[in-house]
Image (cartoon, rainbow, N blue to C red; front, side):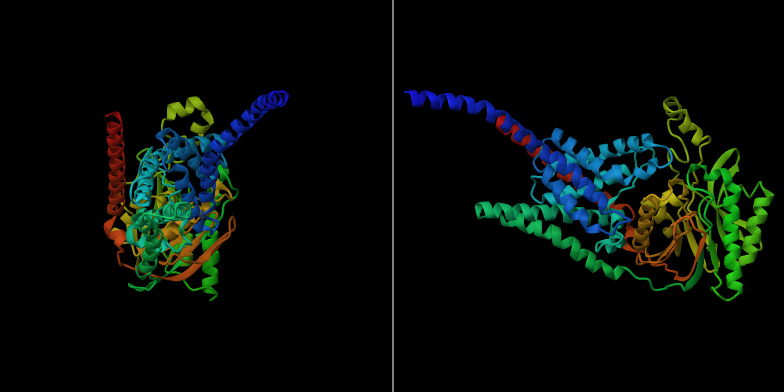
Length: 537
C-alpha cells in the first residue's frame, strides 16, 4: 500500500511539470508554419537580382504550398501576409532610401494584402485535383490585380522579373510576364506535390496515379516548354543594324536633392556626348547613328531656356547624330516628363510624354491626406506631372526607336504599345539617382532584359547615374556601365520587326490565367458548400 501511494504521488507531481512543456511544444509547432511562410518569402526575395539565384523561387513556392495546404481562410490570410512581408520588405527597401522608412513600410503593408488574399485562394484550391495548376493561376491573378490597383498599379516584384538569368526566360516570348511567372510558380507548387506524394508513398505504400502524374507534369512541362520556346529567341538582324550610343552623364550627387543642380546634370550629359564625339573624330570609337540620353538629363526646360537649348544643340552638332533627350517641360501650366527628339540640324522635331507616371514620385494621390500626415512629403512633389496619351516611337536615322521611360518598363502594356506601333528597338531612359546604390537599379535592369526577350527587340538602357546597358533581343547584356560615373556605350545592334506570340496576344494569356484561377476558386467554393450541406444533412 505504501508503494502504491508513493507511485500516485509521483504521478501527481510529474503531470504538472509535463503539462507546461507540452503546451510550449504545441505553441512552437503552431509557430512553424508562420516562420516557414515568412522565410519562404525571404527565399523568394533572394532569387531576385542583383543575385542570379533565380532557381530559389522554386523551393520558395514549394514551401509556401506546404504551408497553405488545407488551411482555413483566416490562417491562410495570415500566412499569405507573412509570405508577402518576407518577400516585399527587403525587395522594396529602396523606396525608403531618401524619404525614410514610413513610405516604404506603408507600401509593403498595402502590397502584402494582395499576397495575403492570394494565400487564401491558394489554400482554397489546395485540395482540388491538379492543385498546382489552380494555385499557380491564382498567383498570377494576384499579380494582375497588383499591376492595376491602387493608383494604376505597382507590378514591381512580378515573378517574371526575377527570371532574367533563368531557364524559363524564353517563355516571356510565348505569353509575356504572366506565362513566364505562371511557369515558375507552377513548377514550385509541383515540386511540393512531388515531395508530398513521395512522403505519402513511404508512409502508406500507395499513391493515387492521377495525382502523381499531375505533380510530375507540373514540374516537367514548364521546363520542357521553356526549352521548346528557345526557338522564339533570336538576335539576328531583320531590318539591318544601327549603331547606338547610350550616354550616362552622371549627377553631382545622389539622392532627391540632385535636382537642385539641374543645370549641372544637363552639362554633364552634354560634356560626355562631346567627349564621345572627340573619340569618334580620333577614330577610337565607331560613329553612332543615334544617341540616347536618360530621363531627366535636362530638367531645365529647353523650350523656355535658351541656354539649355544651346547646350543640347551644341552636343548634337558635335556628335552629328539625333539625340533623344529626357527633359521636364511645362505646357499650358502642366508639367510633363518628356523625351525630345533633337536633330543636329532641325532642332527638336518630335516628343514623347511619359504615360505611366509614378504615384508619390511624379504625382501625389490623396494630397490633402498625405499633407496632413507629413507636410515634407507634399513639398517633395509640389506640382503633379501630367500623363501623356500616345505611344512614343522616334524615327532616328534608319531605326524606329520605342521610348519606355523608367517606371513604365514594369508595365506590360506600356512596352507592348511601342512595339505594336512599329518600334524596331526599345530605349528605357531612366533616372535612378534618387535611389543611390540600392538594388532598385538591378531590379529594373532585369525587367528590361525580360522585355527584350518578350518582344524580341534590342533594349538600350541609358541611365543618369547607372547602371546603363545594352541588351540583345535574347536578353544578354553586352555592355554595361558602373554606377555614379560618366560613361558612354557604343554598339552596332540588330533591328527587328518580328512580333512574338507575346506581342501578338497582348493581355490574352493573362486573361486566360485569371479565368483559370476564377474557375478553380469557383470549384473549390462549390465543393466546400456541398460538403457543408452534406454534413448538415
